[in-house]
Length: 108
Image (cartoon, rainbow, N blue to C red; front, side, top):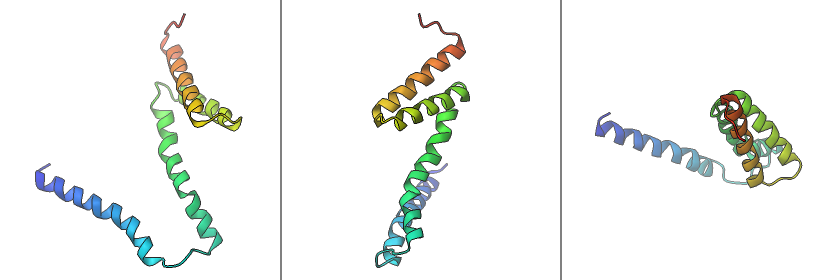
């Protein structure tokens, strides 16, 4: 890519990201009263995070099985009241150990 093309791409990215932030503020003046629209907008950040995170959990490990097992263990740990950091540590440890077992590492 030439320098001119890179600058055009950066400017396009700036315009696009700012439009999706500024446009709603200029078009919607008052408070949103529609219950369905409000609930939809409430869950958009969580859905976006889930859509970006779940495929990465499964695809970044050596085997998709270790990612799915780590995800399942993490969900159970979170359901039982574990915080974000302990759940992350548990999931990383499970994925690491399962990948190690699949590669034939000896842990002892």
